[in-house]
Length: 477
Image (cartoon, rainbow, N blue to C red; front, side):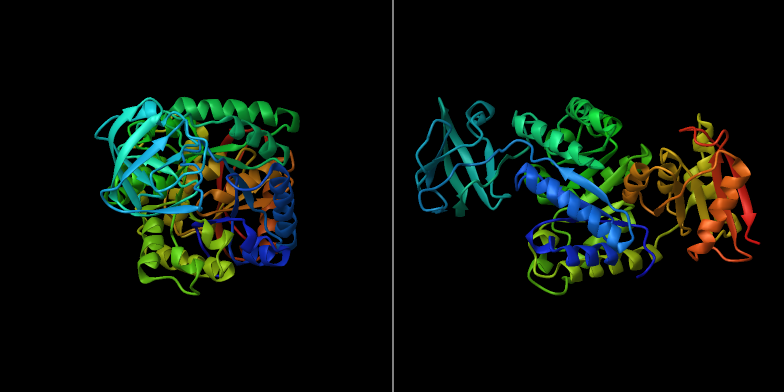
């Protein structure tokens, strides 16, 4: 397996739930397993989390688990025949009060607030933008529309408003219940769907911390950027989160397909600037749901996300319900590794004009700079919280970062950090013993050998979170 800095997030589903296959997927390069809370019951997720932990143990690799919340259900209701065919020019009514199944004339709504969120002249996009409706008028609970772009509309398809503006809260009662479930198996990350402001993320963090208190667990929080309103608030959302997901599906429907590539680049740059992680998602290897090889365009898409500096690339239906989950992971890992070889390292330029107010952050940057100019074999961080490796991972460098931590929760959290290889290791309270143990650990794994130079950071006194204050450059005896 090629050495690879970019991490892979894979969604668990019927196609990947076989224990043997899951073990193979982890062995082939999955770093984070996503549990999609839009499907399944609480007990299903608890059992799947257990399945992931056991498969990771058998594969000999720790992975992070990400619980992805459903968010508000902004969807149409159900149809008497399961679907209708809408033709351009037809009149179609979205009716919040309708209880009977829908037909070619109209349908009920899961999202009852729609009539209050729209007005004449608005454009509604259904089923990921495949169907376009123009709002003619709003009468009470009814939104009267004309079909602009027709097609087949089936049960429970999503509704977006062009330009954004739907008032649904990011966290629903179901999400709050799902957070409790996710904390019961200590999900490493919780992804919040449709946040519009930093307040949505702050509320999610509060709920996670309360639900996780009895397990002594606090997850990392990922904001899924998929609403037009989130874009002007990107900076404040980033500051309130541990990372973001470039959720290109819903975002493209709200802002238009053409705007997404530039937004993706802007979001990745912003995440790196604020020392947050970033996942690029949606349709990355879509054709591999049914084909054993990706299209050339998909290969370019994944490679471009890597060259933009994303921490991770994500697979959804490709691994959840696709026919070739293992082949998809292998292909994606190869594309990432190949793209990284072409990556420019511009550390000197990155550091010019930078100011550090924290000792630990200065040490992290010093380790990168020294290792790069000395041509070190590895950068090693003895870490309790994972902050030092996170800072190091914000800058492209073709030297692997090995994060040695005594805490399993920190090891799993770091599975998402670009170019960081988290390893579990008990740490002595005595500095020299800890450094000797670290070198022995790396030698045993074949990471360094006699004569190799490596840079190592730690904190004195040992084991104090946020206390990294020492950088040493050592040659292996």
